[in-house]
Length: 127
Image (tube, rainbow, N blue to C red; front, side):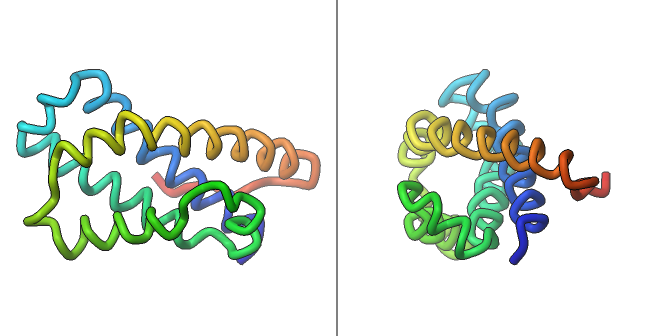
């Protein structure tokens, strides 16, 4: 993978996190009791985790403090064990783990966008 691809997947992670922040984090744990919000949150978490696995190996090695393997396991649980997902665990991840990951991703996005601007146009997401 290239830096270009990493920028794209970091953007996907950031967008998924923003969706979670704009709904569940603002509304609190009880919002996960609403089926539409819960389903949207699970989809966003799955997208976020899947995107993290598509980052280049070199990027993940440079950021070895991020628990990439646990993210992959969480994604698998959401995708394949969705009937057994414990919402208290999901909320704990949203409340404690997501902010740490998002801070790192947003810092890296800023750095990569600055780097890309100095070298030319970066990737664009189709809306």
